[in-house]
Length: 217
Length: 351
Image (tube, rainbow over all chains, first blue to last red; front, side, top):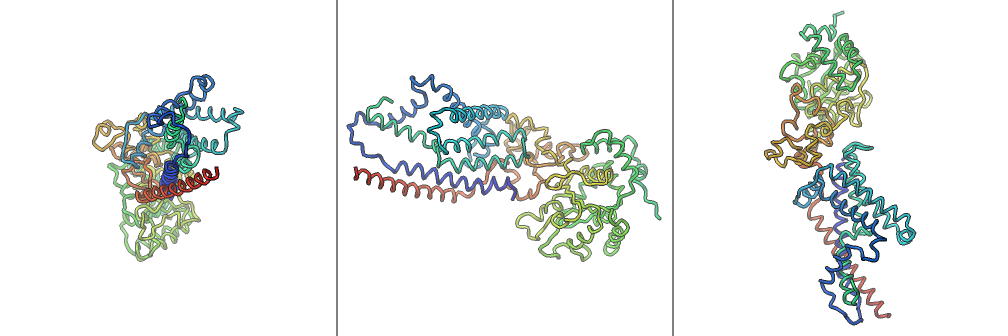
């Protein structure tokens, strides 16, 4: 078994098993935890509408912070949209997902994906440099923040190396890329990358709690 | 002593023109990535070389490699070069059989001790020596006996180079490659199922010209021919970059000559010269004929998943195991939630 076969086979399988088990563990654990008893008088019902409202409004910066957070906000949007495009609109990736789910969809030309990938990488580095240089962000950052950034950027970097055949041969680069994806999948449910599947659950819950207490959301 | 004609004399006798011969030398120099200044040296070396003695051993194989070399549409210069070597033993091509054939092999080994080349096609069965024998001699014994006085060994085809089809899972004969057994002689792997005739002769030409084995990659293949992937040199590569793929063998994309990646092409991970040297006198190669590359020059290509499965397809394991992982996740979640509720209740009581 060569490195590529190991990456495409056992490594990916173990990563998928851990991803599935870990993700469901986190979601079920949070959903079944229930709410703490709230003895305050309800200002509002705090229903699904409140949840959806906060999911929407939190996508944008509140007016007082717009100027101060413009740069990281733009970088974060570039990084997230870029990650989405490189993961889901690159044709070989679509084939990968098709092999898994049976569904496929149209992709973008490789050159466009490469450009998006580079932009995503630049934004990723811009964000980590800001985190490492801002006194406040440095204080509130821990291992999880840096490691989550590392395992997110690693597949992007290894993926961008493939078309330029840098450092290694194609099949070795592909194997390293898949192994880096396996690492991402394994870490994803446990660290802050859990926001991939928890973001709407947590924002919705926040919206419902805030609305019940009468806070402006 | 019997006069052994030079390769040049033999080619002249066969009617190969000077122009045709130099064209071959120029092509070979180009294939080997040698500067044009080396063309006269190649020509001189080939012309003046005494017919090198070659012993060709065929073990667990299909004779496709020999066919690749001998069944070309018309006699080519590279084919004639191959005629010009002293092929002292090749049990498909030789007239002699039985003890006479074995006597010819031993005579060639004695006369050319230390300087003959051994070409092998086919893998060697190790599970039982009786699985493949020639004149009652097991493949293993014949190989080890023959390579003792050889200058170098060339493993022709994927079976000899890597085990090939006989070595595919579950490998019932315990087939192994030449390089697994021959460790004290230079072994050059020229894989392919079959290999390109021009590549076989060019490897021999380089050996004749420089008297040493060419630079090899990690799988023992000459870098001059196996240094680039099919994908790197494929004329359909621009379609890959544009994201234009044939979805089936008869759709619009297939007719327009788009990339065959989605149809399982192994070009990106296959190192060979098909896309540049091509087949049948430079006519075409499999991708040009509309079929994806099978990756036949790569180790264990039979066992690397479906021929028509795209390279980017992962092997995700069984659905049952994924369902098991999901069930384990639910169980863990329930336990974690119960523990959380218990802690919450405890704090509420204390408060």
